[in-house]
Length: 306
Image (cartoon, rainbow, N blue to C red; front, side, top):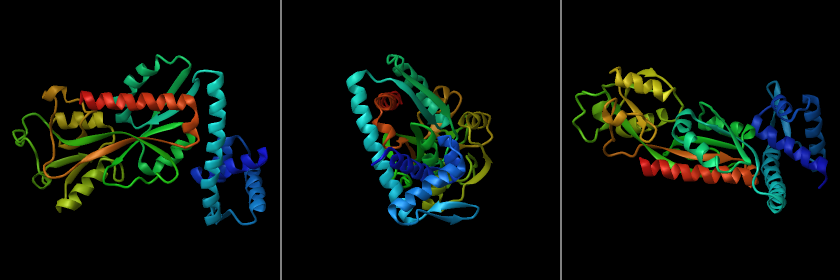
């Protein structure tokens, strides 16, 4: 397979992840017309249409989607070969780009950076991104590692095309203000909380998914009075008595019960799964593997402390 063939496969893979020719052109530093030309040439090579018109742009045909999966396999094999040679020459080195959801960064990023301080040739550059599971594939096109979270009752929406590395299961507790009438209870049933003012996150975001799943299972209708995506703001609202919330156990600052009271739900499992998600080809880089090892170690330490 020639170098040009590999470049065309890379273009197809990027279109599958990014959804538009314009986005692919921006990511690969080409013009949109050059990207379209690459896609046409690849279609001529395989002898069938790989894209079709869709609105003002294009989308992959069934053949295009199948070939995009195989393209990732080819690029992964090439990355594996490069990594094997790189390991013979030197220790892991280079820049690793990561994206983490904000409360996950609050929980794990300081310790992660401390662990990587002992690996001077690997540089981690991380940004916090308010993400949903649906945005993870596109984020992993721009980052080597994406730390994501989702409702444990939900099937992984990206396991077929991404490498998913489990990090930890974080239980969700009911957060109450000090002095709440239910504070003396060790466990709380969702049905007895239905009339309480709930503070949740935006519809479709993790944690709200959990609350809605629990509501369906119990036949309740929680009364949501505020929707705030920043858990640190939610903590302040709960502490001030403006409502109750489902908050993650390990990353909530309850000040030992002085600021917030946390109580588990009775009779149901409520948790978010925290995972590292990346392209298989990215996982072949030795520097990325170093970051993944440090992430797993930090996640284990979080659970141990919790």
